[in-house]
Length: 286
Image (cartoon, rainbow, N blue to C red):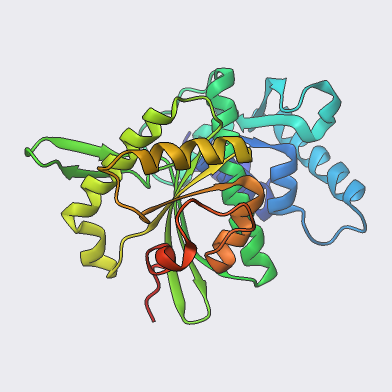
C-alpha cells in the first residue's frame, strides 16, 4: 500500500476507526464486547445504544475489508453480536503495517478454537486493566502484548532461552509502581506445564536483567477460570521444592481486579499468606 493509498483511505476513516484497527492489531483478536468497552464506553445513553453503535462501525469497516469476523462466536449463537470475534482484514493489515513502517506481512487466516479462546482471554485481562485506568482506580503506565512482552536471556548453561508471558504491565497506585507478568490460563494444560514455565520465570529472574533496569522483579500472576483450577495450580507450585515460595500468584478472573488494585485478591486466598508475599507481589518503588 503506497503512501497515496494510505492517505486516501485515511480521509474516510475517523480517529476512532484508526484506534479500533490499532487495538485489533495489538491484541490480534477482539470480541465486539471488548471493542465496545475500549472505544464506546462513553457518549452513549445506554449499553444497548453503545452496542448498536459499535456494530454499525464494525460493519462499515468490514465492508472495506479493514476488519473480518471469525466464523465462530464466543459463547455460542446466544451471545449475539457481543460474541463475534474480529481480526484485521487484508486491507486493514496493510494499512496498519504501512502506518507503523513494518515490512513483515502477517497472514490472517481463521485461527483454531484453542488459539482464539486464549487470545480473547488474554485480551480480556488487558481490557480490564484499561478499564481500571479509565476509572482512575490505578494508572496504567504500560501494557505490552505478545510478542513485544517476550524476553530472551542466557540460561544457566549459556543457551538462549525465551520467556513468553501473555502480558506485561506497569501500573501505578499511590506512591507505588507495580510490575506484572500475566498469564491467561484456561485450564487446558496440566499443572506440570505451569510449573515448568514458573521455572523459566525463575531462571529469567536469576539473570537480574529486569531488576537492573527497574529495581524490582515483576509479580507473576496466573489468572484462572475458577477456584478448582486455582487450588490445583497453587498445589502444584507448592509441591515442587524448586519453586521459590511467594514469587508466583494464582487468582481467578473475578479476583484479578482486586489483585491489581491492592495486591490482595478476594477470598479464596492463595496458599501462602499474603503478608509474606506482599513485597514481592507489589514490587513497589517509590
